[in-house]
Structure formats: structure tokens, C-alpha cells
Image 1 (cartoon, rainbow, N blue to C red):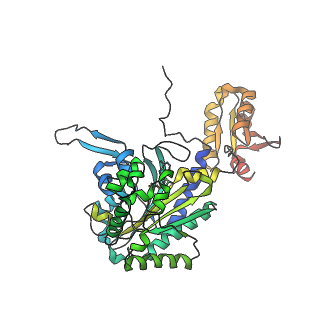
Image 2 (spheres, rainbow, N blue to C red; image 1 turned 45 degrees about the horizontal axis):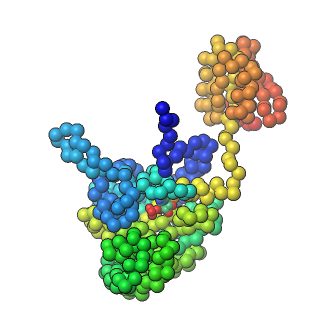
Image 3 (cartoon, rainbow, N blue to C red; image 1 turned 90 degrees about the horizontal axis):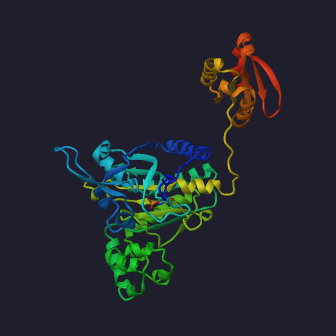
Length: 428
Ligand code: AMP
């Protein structure tokens, strides 16, 4: 028999590493709450149509990377349906926004999520088939100010503050405007024209993209196509006055609050729904997969999903990559030690030991519990690996109600009445 292992591109997250994940998640919740965001949890699988329409058929995600299956009907009243493990979460959030008529509040909806996403990509450092994203969306009717460049700048400032608070420095914010539904077609036409005479020299993927979705050619990471890509027209030269003014206002607001950025006219990002502002935060420490997060505006997405007009802006951050960045240069974290290890010295004291552990845990202490079968030597060996102190519970201790506590670091041994134990452990 072969030993079963986690599937390629997936992995187990184990303690103590998960403590770092928890810390990042707690920081997310704390910082995002200050900006008045609330958490949304959407299903992990959705109707395949959601991604086909929302993310775009021609994107790499939809055309190559989705985990899709036909879900057979189980009853006559059900229809079989094509389902997909979510490859990203924005489409799901916008679907929920439409389904729950959130726009009818007339207010901006500020929603964040933390959860796994699934893409069948080629696994490598920082790229997995199940990976986690922290994301947020600001979406609402235009009357709520959802189109305002202030929203873009506020989201970007929140990200800068979040990374600062996590202690991640050395990031670069790169942004661009990809225009809107009126100016983008003119740019796409210009791209097509520029690509026509040269596309046969490009990689197979780019030849296909040049036909079906020329914007995607700008996304290409293929080094052999770099020279051609560098000479293509720039979107900045095709933006209409409204898009130009919008982008200028985003940059002015970032300047006003001291968020540093670089404008990159080639940044279009891999999802079709983006309009106007698109951005990435990159980090040098990540190597080839250097994007910590990406996002942008998606003013037409709700309507693409048959919803009301609901412009929005959002981002998704790779939690796996945030963790890699935090771990780089840091010593491997040691497991957290319990405050005390309770060691019953015979099996007849196991039940009493459990009751003692319960009392100490209810007092807020981190407690691990041995077993009377270990006897004293093994109890000390195990306790020393798991906790800062050992509490011995033998016949004498049970009778007198006075427990023996030994501090592993100092070797100091003290006698403490049971009623004072929680306090004593808390204070030391
Ligand atoms: P995207 O949804 O493609 O805009 O990606 C947003 C962010 O999610 C990226 O900047 C990465 O940090 C992260 N990400 C995307 N795909 C993966 C993956 N396969 N493995 C790990 N992180 C990923």
C-alpha cells in the first residue's frame, strides 16, 4: 500500500507555524475593523457560471486552473449542475451583494473575507493549489460614493497601514489605470493593431491571447515576448478625461496621506473585471512570486452578473505569501510552552488531576495534563518539553491540598496550596 499524502499543491499547516497565521488573521480583523469593515463568509464552491461570467472565460484562471465538476442531481426536483471550487472570492462577494439586495440600503458595503481559494497552477514556492486569501471589497450604488477616487485611496492607505502594523516593510505599491468601458475598447483596438504584424513571433499562449483578449498579452511573464510587449501602446495614452481625472485624484489622495507608490503603465492584472485603478503590492523577499496582493476597481462586475449598477474596489492578499515574508530572516518559531504540566503520580489520581486542570484552565491558564501511568521520571521528561512548570499531584499532595510546583528554567521548587495555585501560576 502507498502512504497517503497531502495532494500536490496543498499542505498541512502545523503548530507552531499556525500561531503566526492566527496573529496575521487577528491583525487583519483589528485593522479592518478600524476602517469599519465587516466580515463576509461565502461558500467555498459556487456555480461555475459565476466565475465564467465574473472572472472571464479567457483568463488563465477560468480557462485552465479551475477545479470544476458536474454535481449529479440526487432527486428529481434537482438539476445536475456544474460547480467550481472558488478560485477567488470577489465574484462570490458580488454575487452575495446582489442576492441579498445589499445595494438597497443605499450605503456602501465594506466587506472582508479570509479563506482558502483553489487554482490548478504549477506549484512552487509561494504558489499553491489551495492557498489562502485575505480580501476586502467596497461596493455600493453610485449615490453612496462608490465611484469616488477617495474609496480607492482609502483602501490603499488601509493596506499600507496593515502591512506596517504587521511589521512588513520593503513593499512597493505599483498602480495603474486600465480605463473604463468607454475608453478601454479603443485601447484594445490599438493593441490588436500593434500585435497583428508581430504576434506570429510570440509564444503560443500570447498568439492566442492576441486574438481573443489582447489585454492579457500585457500580463505575460514570458521572457521571450518581453521586447514586443515593451513596445506595445500604453493605456495611459488612451484614457478619456474622466478616467484620467479619476486616476489623478487617487494619486493626489495617496500623496496627501504619505502612501508611496510607483505607476506602471503595463499593470493590467489577470482578471477581466477590472476597470480604472488596478494595483499590486510587491515584495522583494518573495522571489519569482513577488506579488503580495493585487486588486482594483470593478465598476461593471455587478452588471456582468445581472445585478444593479454597483461600482466597487477591492483586493486579495496572499496569506501564504504574507507568512513567507514574515518568516524570512526570522528564526524558526519555538512552540509555545504551557504555563504548567499537571502530573498525577498514580492512575488513581488521574480524575483528580483532570479536575485540577479544569480549574486552572477556567482561570485562563494554558495547561497540559499527564497521566498517572507515566510515574515521576517520564512526567518530568514530558513536562519539560511542554510546559514552563510541573505541578505534582501525589497521594501526599491530595491529602494535604498542598501541591509541589517546580520551575524547569530555574530548578526552583515550591509548595503551594491548591486554592492559591492559579494565582501563583499567573504571577510567575
Ligand atoms: P489574484 O486573485 O490572482 O489577483 O491574486 C491575489 C493574490 O493572491 C496574489 O497577489 C497572491 O499573493 C495570492 N495568490 C494568487 N494565486 C496564488 C497561489 N496559487 N498560491 C499562493 N498565493 C496566490
